[in-house]
Length: 234
Image 1 (cartoon, rainbow, N blue to C red):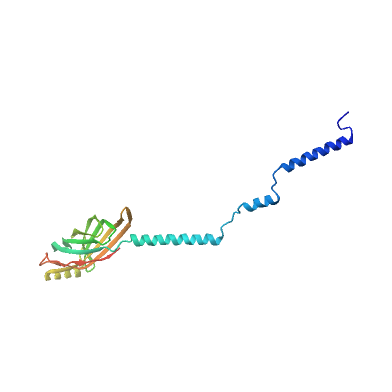
Image 2: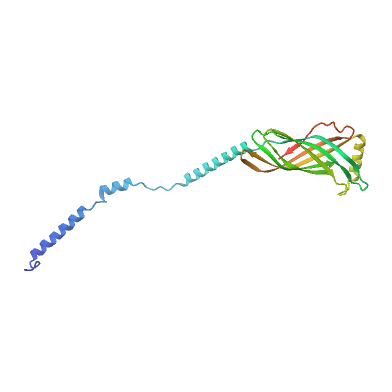
């Protein structure tokens, strides 16, 4: 007799299949209900940072950077340099027939580095001699190195160029009168390019400008001289 000939056998087979299906479903892990709820509660939620927190963090970072910059500036900012003219004399001083000036000015400059931590490297030094706003002579001195709290003397010979230009009439007359009186008063201007060094750290290049007013040149007693301090700007 065939297995499915009677309706009773068919019902029994269907009932067995349903029971088998229910048992298979019951054996699977449940993700709903209390267990599913606990799992969702245990999983942390990802919170997006608020705009206020981002702004506060940015402002705090900028304040920290500004504070560091101020500290570096206070630590690395170089102190003022000092320059003076310790001696000035002239050799071959004379006027040409064409109205020019011949001769040279022998100058001794004193450079002082008062910084306790910074050394100074002078890349070059330009020196000019002026009289009542008129350029008379100039010189270019080589660079030199200065350790912290050091004093250096630089001898400079500023030569006039008699054929380069003609002196104004009032300037020539004024210089002749002062030479006759035995003393000539000139202005000395210095321009230098320097760089400071703190250990292995080097700063940018600075332009040093110094004006040394009323530098006396004594024709009668060229060996006597009173130091003239310069006004230095960096």
